[in-house]
Image 1: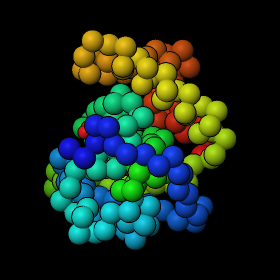
Image 2: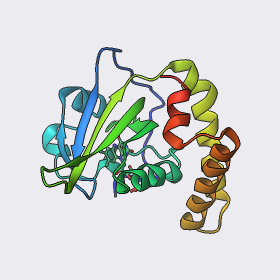
Image 3: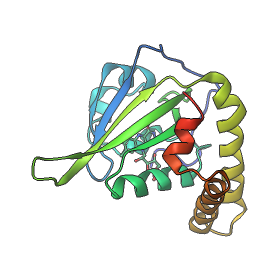
Length: 177
Ligand SMILES: Cc1cc2nc3c(=O)[nH]c(=O)nc-3n(C[C@H](O)[C@H](O)[C@H](O)COP(=O)(O)O)c2cc1C
């Protein structure tokens, strides 16, 4: 595992509104494709990325619950939208608005996943997403085990959705890009 207590520089990387960061994975989340914008932002070369788990760019301040919700939605064969903070190889970080979809072959069999990420709205990240993820991370850290922490944080998100009457994707999209 490359993370745990990874080095962070505190430097935020940004990308252009016209750029899209793209990766594809197999069913296990191993990277099978990245575009040049991905390699530029992640700081990992194609050679360093292909065949590796996508968590090579996991940021330690991302709540586990966010990824759990992403994977559960994908496993149900549905698309999912999510705001994600990523850690570049050198410890810089970059925020994205990701749209992740399941890929099917012609017989309808699930064969992998595809993520396209746009530059997110700065004030939305500052005002809504950073505080939300901070709260979820605190819920996770307060529990006696990582598993229990993640379950509590997932429940916190489900409670929030209950209050708003929206589904996860609906809430993500309602926040604006
Ligand atoms: C298509 C696809 C793209 C993903 N992109 C990212 C990403 O950019 N950053 C990230 O931290 N996790 C991404 N993930 C989720 C990772 O697979 C993983 O669940 C996450 O990094 C948490 O790591 P962990 O499960 O080891 O805690 C992606 C998963 C899929 C299927």
